[in-house]
Image 1 (tube, rainbow, N blue to C red):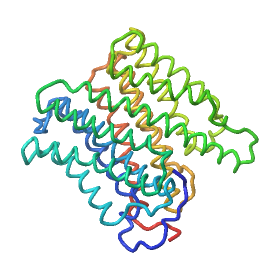
Image 2 (cartoon, helix red, strand yellow):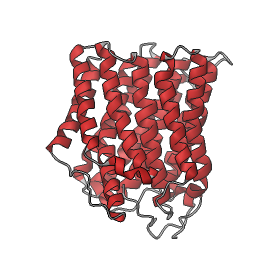
Image 3 (cartoon, one colour):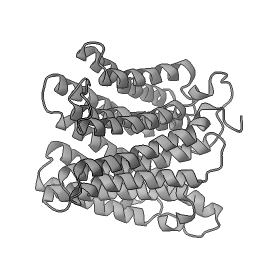
Image 4 (cartoon, rainbow, N blue to C red):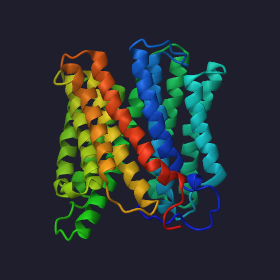
Amino acid sequence: MTDTANERPGYQGLAFFSYGFRPFFLGAALFAGVAVPAWILTLAGAGDSEFLYPARDWHVHEMVFGFLPAVITGFLLTAIPNWTDRPPIRGHELMLLFTLWLAGRLLIAIPWFTPLVSAAVDAAFLVAVAGLVWREIAAGKSWPHAPMGGLISLYAGANILFHVQALSGAATDLPERIALALVMVLLALIGGRVTPNFTREFLVEHGRTERPAPFSRYDGLSVVLVGFAAVAWIVQPCAMVTGWILVAGGLANLGRLSRWHGWITWREPLVLILHLGYGWLALSLLALGGAILGLGLPATDAAHTLTTGAVGVMTLGVMTRASLGHTGRPRHAGSLTVFIYMLVTLGALLRVVGPTTGLPTNLVLGLAAVGWSGAYLLFAVVYGPFLLRPSLDE
């Protein structure tokens, strides 16, 4: 996704529905700021939940199939016009899509209708997103981006499978792994593109001679290893060979990250945070592999290295940069943005390593939630006005 602030002429509707990143970034941030504390309160026994599914399943579903798809949708609907040279999805169509996402969140939390209807409404969102992605790729003949359409279609299928399993009383670990495995691949693809590209821009602007290594066979091998690790983790999550593939993928992507000169970007946290997010991805592969091999973190904490660490840090990195660039503001992280990055990183660290410190579990999880969700709430406070108003250059 490029950082052009131009919203493209010809749209006279509400600024909030002029581009996909506006409603979906703000909606995702507000939801993350509320849903995780609600889960912690439920876990602590502060009240009886009336969710569609048991509290644990609700938490997993809403983070993996509720919050994250909103961020991905905001990114895709903003990037696709650059891929296809077509007008962005906006206005009533975007409003309806956002309403469908909101309806899914409400019906999973408070199932006013039958479980089947509530599940169908939620599942319809990712199906609709996949359909829109394929429509735009086909209309713009942007077939090199077809893998993105395939990944979103698989994501929609995983959500449907989650509902089928949950409604039938079966375990939902398989669709959860499918979704998280797809997230690994998406982060490797998207993070592996935007991080070196924006780093190159930064280095050129500041007159540095260093450049991130261009995409090579090594980068291709690193992404392929993530793909193999994702498939192996879905099919054989406890097999030793899966553990070793995950570890190999983590090491390869640490090497890939080192070729992008991220340490030079410390003067601009807006770029540095993308390197930290990709570093979390590599560490999550190592942690998940180590958990299978009996080394390092337990499996649950290792999984949160991916969800709270890689997903949390990378999404906020992309959301802050896109929100600034596409609303005509300078691409620079101010003090509040830096504080957002600090909060999400602290929250991720507490969630991943806190349970191993021996401190009371509810205390550790509560502090982790304050940091992680607090980062998204602060994003909503700081960036919400930018997302609700027209771009400065309009």
